[in-house]
Image (cartoon, rainbow, N blue to C red; front, side, top):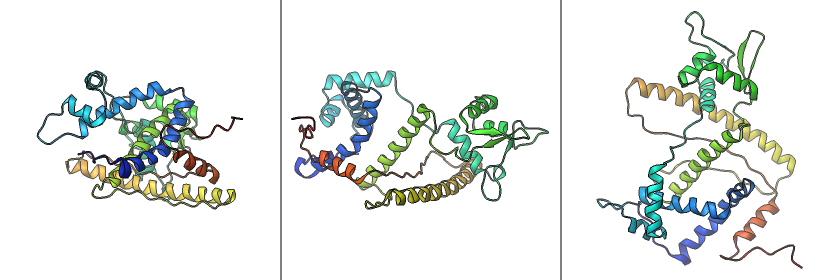
Length: 300
């Protein structure tokens, strides 16, 4: 990939304007959890170096520290240091969590759902060689952890419950955002990254374009927003369940046909609402020139 030429008056300025707004919720998250400006600048610097090193190579030429420095504006000595640090402690790509994979399998396998697509109660353990059980479900996703460990944790946090026949029953709200902060952070990382990557792919003219659609209205009452929120949740859940079932079928078919299966997908939906005056305030702050602060409302 080659970087676009920098035209501050025509290209860089609108990109920075868009980034201002994109960064606002991330800065809010960082301030809430004590991630200060000096710390995040080093993270941004190392990310600049890593992306330039991996994705902006010249065909047939070795990617040098000098070229990375030219592309990123990071000093060549820092480039060398950051590359060495990255090689010593490279982060693995984040995959789907075990819990999410189990719920997806439970909702997607035909033998684990009823005629309406609802998850069936599962016996705790496989008996008489039966294939349908909570134990078999866990083993179909991972053989590294015992089903009892998963069950105890899921009972604790309310993902499942036991019925009178001692079967494991999936909570209807199991696909709602996780209660555990670490789990929520995992999905923030995975979903926001992929949404941004799809948008950047489309903005850069990537082919074929990736799906990115939304509906936007800004003159609604709180009651109307609540109705649309419920409708969005219903429609999104249906779409996710249909895609999940088909993905399981295709994954199994690819495996049986020994096809090269090196691709991943992520499909999701979101619903956001806020007062319209908050949008206006953010737009006003976004329009402030570089280095200028918003008016100090506490000033005399």
